[in-house]
Image (cartoon, rainbow, N blue to C red; front, top):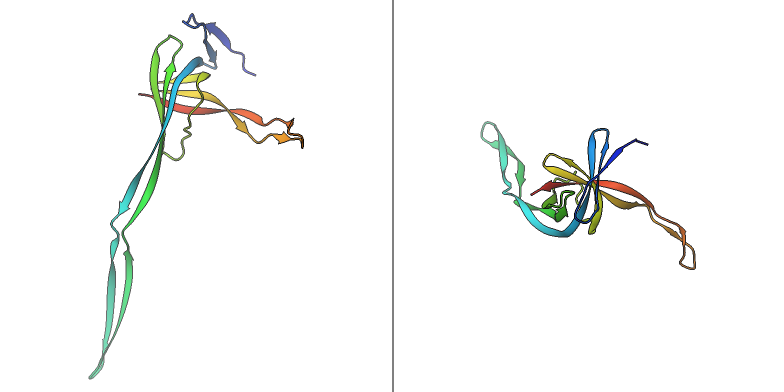
Length: 162
C-alpha cells in the first residue's frame, strides 16, 4: 500500500482533501449535475462502379469473346452511435466547472456517474474521476437474502474540461 501525505483544504462545505501519491495529486470533487446525450450520425459510402474486362480471340471467320466483371460496391451508410456525458463539478477551491466525456472513440470509457463526492486526478485539461463499479454479481439465498455480495472496484473515467 502506498504511503500518502494528506493536505486538508479549507472548503465551503468542509469536504475534500488533496492527497499526493507518487507525485500524482488526488483531489476530492463533488459532481453536482450530470446528463447523458445520445445521437447518431452516418458515414456514407457512394459505392463504386463495376469494371468489365473483355478478352476476344479471333479465328479465320469467327470471333469468341469472354467478359469478366469485377468490383462494384453499392452505395451504403453505416450508423455511428455517439454518447456524451456532461457534468458540473465543484472543485476543491469551490469553483464549479463543466466537464464532458464522449464516445467515439470506441476505446474510451464514458458513463454517467451518480451525483456525489469522488476522488479525482487532474492532468492538464482533463480530470479522471475514480468511480466505484460492480465487478460481478451478488449471490442470493432462496429466501432473497444476500449469500455473497458483489465485488466492487474502481474505474477511472476521463472527462475533459469544457
